[in-house]
Structures are given as structure tokens and as C-alpha cells.
Amino acid sequence: MSEIRLAAEPRNEFGKGAARRARRAGFVPGVVYGHGHAPVHLNLPGHDLMMALKTPNALLVVPIEGKDEYVLPKAVQREAIKRSIEHVDLLLVKRGEKVTVEIPVIIEGELAPGGNLVEHVLNALPIEAEALHLPESVTVSVEGLEAGAAITAGDIKLPANVSLAVEADAVVLQIIGAQAAPAEEEAAEAAEETTEA
Image (cartoon, rainbow, N blue to C red; front, top):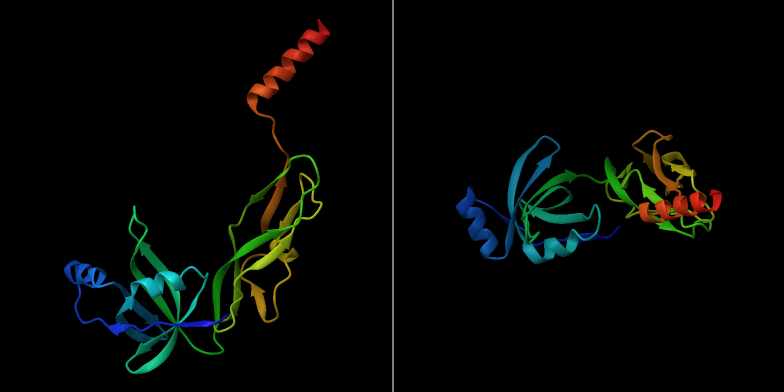
């Protein structure tokens, strides 16, 4: 995963008024914590941050006390209607450190004929990996699977040096049979009754 450098500035003003002023100037208030370090308050460039967070578990590089540090987004608060970023919590990480994150599960392949559907039991797969080498996603094939089939966490092939942070028998995806719409079922039952009569 490539790192994304953000030109953050130290934040010395606090409270709602200061946060509103920062947002009007195009910044997003944020806080960096972790490794027993005192929390560091920053203003991050809003547009650059929004683009960076389009990548799951984006590895960000921000200047803290004159030194570039690696951070991962931990919590993002968004405005309810516009969905703009209001505040971000960042976790300080070091090279070689293992972290637990969730990564998207990408599906490929065609199910067996019959109008079956894939149900996501887990929307993302919890994994543990080295902070500076997090996979962006994992791909799972559903080729030829029929209703009743399931894919567990243990069935998913993970990249090297990545381990599951969930039980191996946890169901990630299951294939469910297509269900006829209620009107179609009623019509079918009525047709059967007519045939029997």
C-alpha cells in the first residue's frame, strides 16, 4: 500500500468555534494518539484528506513536531447530510508494528444458474498485518456456487504475513436461493388449485 503525505498543521485553538473556522478555511480538525504519546491536535487539508480516505485503511504521513510520522485513520466523523468530514482520529503506527484492521471483500465469478444471491455476512474481513504493508482488499471467487454454500474466513487466501483477526469458521459470504415474489407465489398456488379442481 502506498503512503499518502498530508501537509498537516499544528492546531492550537480548540472548541466548536475554532473547529468551524478551520473547516471554513478548508481544514479538518484531527487528533493523533497512540504509543503512549500525548494526543497531538492537527488541522489537515480537507480535500486531500477526503481523497486519501477513499482508500480503505489509507497509510498517511503527517508532520508531528517537525518529524514525519505514519498514521492510520481510526474514526471519521461526517456531517449527517453533506457527508463532509468533520473530524478525524488518527492512530500513530511504527514500521514493523502489527495492527488489526478490516479490509473489503471483493467478489468475482458467476454463481450457479438459478437466480441465487450472495449475502455478505461480514461486510469486511478483520485481519492483522504489518502497519506499513496492509492489503487494500481480498478477492473471493463464488464461481459455480449454489444456494446453501458458504465461504468462511478460513477459506479466504490471504497475502503473505497477513493473519485473520476473526475465527476461521466465521461465515463471510453465503449463497441464498432466489425467492419468488409474494404475488408470483400466490399466482402459482392459484394455478395449482385450478389444476387440482
